[in-house]
Image (cartoon, rainbow, N blue to C red; front, side, top):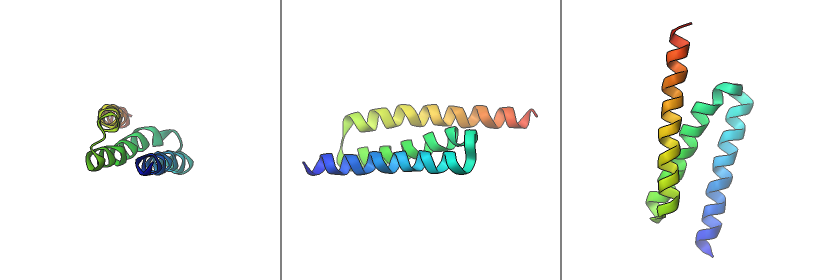
Length: 78
């Protein structure tokens, strides 16, 4: 029961990070928000030894980093 409460709090924090970044940065928040949210999820997964959380956070961290690289490459070519 305690782990479900912690997981709910972490997911709420991840949602809040995404919403705040979208409000302040607009479309540019997607690469930043995915990367920050996945880092929070990865830290939680490592601390609690939650395999599923760690796996999905790692996948989205890679996606977020690829989006950041793509964004900066496009920004540089302008």
